Image 1 (cartoon, rainbow, N blue to C red):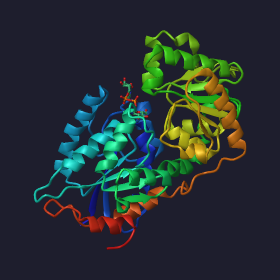
Image 2 (image 1 turned 45 degrees about the vertical axis):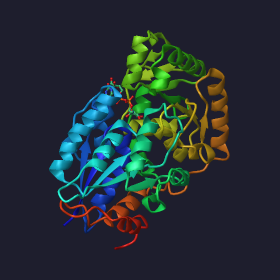
Image 3 (image 1 turned 135 degrees about the vertical axis):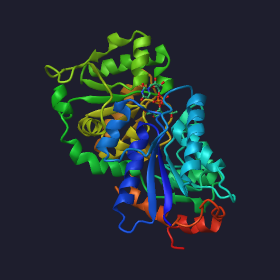
Length: 406
Ligand code: UD1
């Protein structure tokens, strides 16, 4: 019997993390796995979901829970109630969750508490485990802590994540450093991303513009902080145009706070090259984002994933936050933690440009093969949580996590 694996995706940053796992599963010749994608529907706009599935050549999810937006409790609870039914119906052996969004923690909780007749339950596997910002006011940090504490296998993207897990008492045999699956997606899609029309449509020259993304509640949910950030971006954009694809949350806040006059709304195609200004457009597709990142002179962001993607591309990155769960992008890569004051951002920009042209390097195992390594371990988890079988004994996990055969 094949090992039945459910791969969970909920929100935009999840798709490029599940894709390499699905590709590696599809490539395997004699497959011991049976893998399905479950979408929780946390993100539902076409531009935040369907377009990414298309670009990443992922099949339609077999289930879409359609949870949509809501408060944290509502969103998490809705995923839990609906995902519990999926577990009952599909009886998977393994549930793979990625990243740190509400859907990740919700599915982790359900998996860890589920129980088939006979006492077995599916194994819980967390991809991108062990990242810590040490800021528990961030919902993502709470999601990471909960998910890692419950996971049977923790796949990590960097060695400092291993150290974080060990310090929290996660047994070493549950931790497996496999590299960064998001960089698998980036490397595979970069060439095709050059074929999209974004820069010509907007009249932007390679290396003649900056790129900014902004969506963290701490930055966009208060008028004062959003206003200050937009003013600083405006000052930077007085020299070099800055492209700002607007996340729906940010667009809503800009409108609600009456800050629309800070932005230049750009039609596509635009009628001429904008020499300067903060250029707001709708969210970009994955390929468009890759093209924009690769050709940007610099990137300013409060996203987690973009800190890693810019490090892999060697593009200067200024992180508009007080902390990061991805310190490796600062220690080894092109990232600078700048906070959100005008002085901090301007100094950060100068420092990031200096780093990118001198000391930065791509971290260990960000080599495009993390998905393969993950699937290799999943294949060793063959036996086990059949409906009436006993739960995985720890010894089996130790062998699996070491990449060995049973
Ligand atoms: C979520 C993740 C965050 C991730 C981000 C990437 C959590 C806690 N947060 O934040 O880690 O970096 O996604 O995008 O899981 N909305 C739409 N259309 C959509 C989705 C959302 O219009 O398809 C609007 C809704 O009004 C919603 C708001 O955006 O209230 C925020 O969406 P939500 O999923 O709650 O959080 P994000 O800010 O997207």
